[in-house]
Amino acid sequence: MSSEHHESLGADMGSEEFRAALQRVGEWVAAYRERVGGMPVLSRVRPGEVGAGIPDAAPREGEPVEAWLADLDRLVVPGLTHWNHPGFMAYFGISGSGPGILGELVAAAFNVNGMLWKTSPALTEVEQAVLRWLASALGLPSDWFAMIADTASTSTLVALAAAREAAGVAVRERGLAGSRPLVMYCSEEAHSSVDKAGIVLGVGLENVRRIPSDSDFRMRVDLLDAAIRDDLAVGRMPFAVVATVGTTSATAVDPVPAIADACRRHGLWLHVDAAYAGSAAIAPEFRWLLEGCERADSLVTNPHKWLFTPIDCSVLYTRRPEVFRAALSLVPEYLRTDVGEVVDLMDYSFQLGRRFRALKLWWVFRHFGVDGIAERIREHCRLARTLAEWIDAEPGMERLAPVTTSVVCFRLRPHGVDDEGELERANRAALDAVNASGEVFLSHTKLKGRFCLRAAIGNLQTGETQVRRAFELTRGAAGAGLV
Image 1 (cartoon, one colour):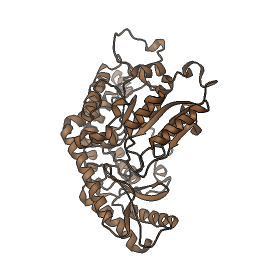
Image 2 (cartoon, rainbow, N blue to C red):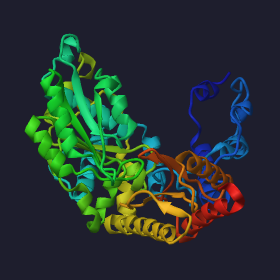
Image 3 (cartoon, rainbow, N blue to C red):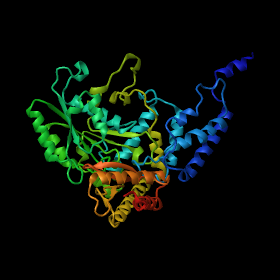
Image 4 (cartoon, rainbow, N blue to C red):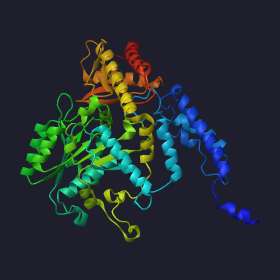
């Protein structure tokens, strides 16, 4: 066996082979983006169908890229719910834009780990710079510390771990044994990630207080204040409040200034979940959404929800980075460096490994510009208002929540039908019929116990044609005798 053959046994894909494969894959991706609007938006495969098409064992010898791409078309694409489809309106739009996809590709090619500044200085410094861009675009304080996590669930968990540290509980050394019961607060409309954080942090679901909301689904601060006082009176330890800017169901905006006042009165950490609606503040007319947030101890917003950045990219801001370090920094000998005053991102979270997520966000800003992003967000909000106007003018349909940004909550409400159980059955049937069309994909939620349909507009390719079609299909489901 020749020495050249020996060397090839441990080698990567050759340079020319890689260039050819990159071109083939790039062409496939570009073609997919062009044709995605003609596919059924919601996958129609049965459970286990995709897995059944994959051999039980990996191939003994390598296969050409043509075989990989053939299986994308044969197995993977039919098993996708297409989040980049212009008719996708089920959840907060994760619109993987062209510049974002290109940034993801380059980040994968670099394959660096930013756990320490030293392990990839560019990752840390680009991330810090781009997150200052984002803070400026949103009108947030420019001196806040920021870092990127995978999702808002992680960002919220890390923020509440810092809040627990700030409360003076010696969890780091002794755990929760012997401490007074910790209590944290959020709206009844807050995301389930708050409850999960309570589970992971040892707070327990019984001590996550969900405060009732008002008629517009915003946290009632008078009831928050009363709950805090009640817990203090019986010896519990309130330590954090989570306010939401853009709740998952109705995109309601909690009264952050009043909540900040309550946190100041009682000495509690204020974390703001602006995962979805925070991005809208890039448009000046929506800057009101973040009013009072400059008083928060921490805030999360997700560029992968409404800033056209491929998942995953969640940004966590804080004005108290030293508390994060106190709670989470742990430096074993093998991670010690002789570098001076730098940011080692591992010190601010439980995560060690870090992808170069900032690169795709950097390129999104550089392609669209702040004004271009604002224009697109503004258009999504216009489309939502237009849909709301059609619903409000349509007999037999009703809107169930204010349209704050780009989400509309509504239902079929035929004349003379008042029973909530009957209305729910009818609207579930209508939702199934709409989604079975393959043209659009809507989701559902419940608001104050009332089942409703939910249209979230946020994809770059979604226009008035798709929104009109969603309205017509829903109205048509009623006309088909479903209600």
